[in-house]
Amino acid sequence: MKNAQMKNDWVETTLGELFFTTSGGTPSRKYKAYYEGTIPWVKSGELDKGLILDTEEKITEEAIKNSSAKKFPEGTLLIALYGATIGKLAFLGVEAATNQAICGIFENDNFNSKFLYNYLLFRKPKLISQGSGGAQPNISQTILKKLKIPLAPLPEQRAIVAKIEALFSDLDSGVADLKTAQAQLKIYRQAVLKKAFEGGRKVVSAQEVTRVISDGDHQAPPKATTGIPFIVISNIKKNKIDFTHTKFVPTEYFESLKETRRPQKGDVLYTVTGSFGIPAIVSSDKDFCFQRHIGLLRPNERISSEYLFYVLQSPDLFKQANEGATGTAQKTVSLKNLRNFKIPLCSLEEQRQIVKEIEARLSVCDEVEETIFQALEKAEALRQSILKKAFEGRLLSDEELAACRAEPDWVSAAELLEKN
Image (cartoon, rainbow, N blue to C red; front, side, top):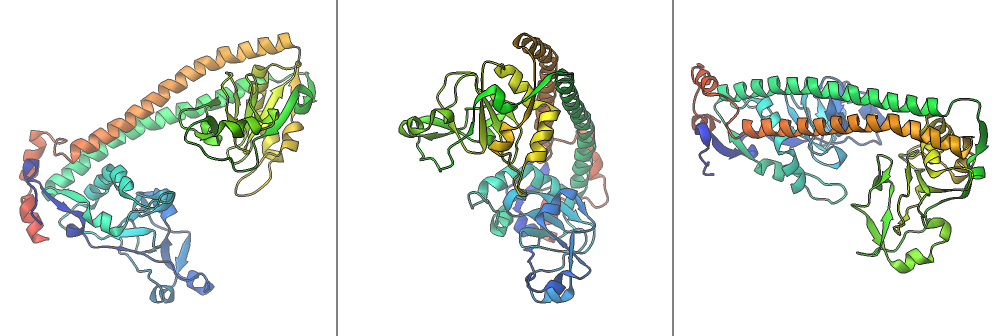
């Protein structure tokens, strides 16, 4: 391969030219004894630890002998090849084996492994975009080996890693503070809602204060490229209905639905499966329909939509939902459970006062939350900016580069590649 000349005399090569890579394997589950050994066996879900020192499962030498699993040395950089964890990275702090969803990138004395770790972190979006497999995208070793890598002199690699880590340390500290504030706001929000509905109010069932409690059509709806929006749980965000990315159903299908499954302005939707317990008010006359994992509550004259909306967000109502939910992998709040929810009720005038008080307090909370969200987005953008500068040779100052050249093991990147 002809290596392209880069800034600061770097050269461009490929990951496959610099590193030996191989994937792991899964010993047969038919033989229980294979999983009663002492050799750590890493699964892709464990790559969020950064440094792997122990694993959930351990296998035997016999398991390795009779499968495609193999032992990787301490210091190997691991990358998840497919599934929900695609692109995740971690170093081995001990000798270990992995499953086939993980590729091991072995150490190379001419290349700083942390430099590679940060470069792969930077190129993660590109790698994922190259992945195939639709719902379960995967990065093949072929894609990984063809990934272009900027090769810098070894002292410069070390200096870049040190600077990235110093900048990221400051960034991580700020992000941690923002996330703490975010968690405190969540606690405050729950405290406001808890206090709002405390007291000696009359308690009634949800069925007593609604005209309709239903859910979406249980049959798979026909698809269309245009027509009536069809929302799913992921369209309910921050207690609002988000129509920006929706599927569509034909108008004829929508019109064939029962009136109880066609939302009206003032109805309250309520997620009942998986991420259950999230209400959202229907705030317009826009026609749309929804999946069966969403419930619909249509208030009667005894309760306002806004009051019901906030009651459904209260800690007490979530506790009722959680205690009544059934299922294991995906808990579900049944319509029977929903209809039997115990709702604290007061006069419509009192409801208006309570809603006004809640909104006054939570509007400030919302503003602060939005500020925190924007700050977190800026922090992530800054992280990417730091990595971009690092791998374009623009992160180190002239003085820092001069110090690198003074290191006893300094040789040009081209010479380093020839030694490889």
